[in-house]
Image (cartoon, rainbow, N blue to C red; front, side, top):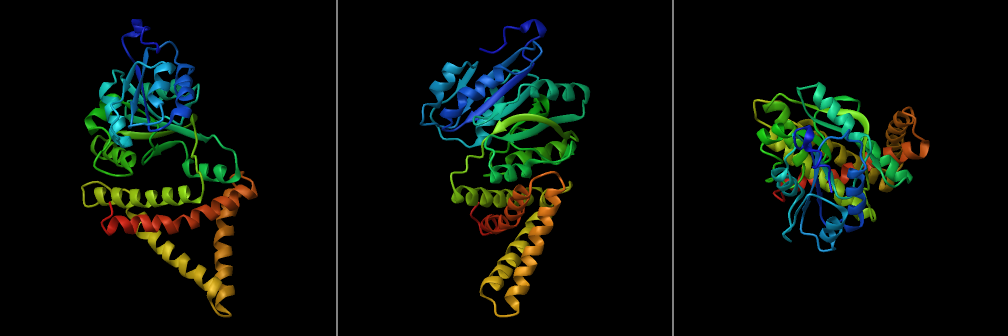
Length: 325
């Protein structure tokens, strides 16, 4: 079990909330990594909130050693699961993890040090390391990279001050995707608290792409997230989030589609001109990534991902605008 028995330090300091849906193969490692973390003797608890798993995930967690299991067989989204876990949490801080993640040993100590020393930081998150090491997996991991310091938002895995999360009303449950960025926007705008990116390894994560359609659906969800969060944050007294993205991405998506059609089906000299422009655009992005120390293979894969993803992301934005929310 957890170190809740270390109550001589004044009660639970840190609550770990793990959420999962059909993550049975990963949950033992996820919970085990929490218990193996460097926590400096502080009292902590582990809460698992299940999203209606049908693969025996709850039984796995029971054997892994947690303090509370919240599972009634009801299918729930991630935001609902996180809020259920948070409602049961007793810690002054709460670390959220997905069931397919493995916490890095030194992360809790590093994150707690930031929150203890900077009272105006409400959320701290770190680096995700992809479990797979292929070229495409490494390239996709670059999407998460950002400088250390103030950030506009974070993903599902992060450490929060419990009071900040409580004042914010928890994770928005009335939005299909993008609940974490919307929550961060509320924390920054309404509470004037900071979201901090710490350049420390936080957790190992598995994108678990089973093929092209997994990638395609993920990019559509990204587009839906952009559009829904932009709509929620527009027209307020605070600066909106993703306003420029929802305008620029469809322009890029349509333009690239036209160029691709011209490069494949266009007459001379249209097709070599269009093809040349596409090559220049891809190489420019690849060179930027290469200068950051990545291999040419990863740089080219990332460049291809950045521009190809604009097609499904545009579809996600348009789907939201057409009412499929």
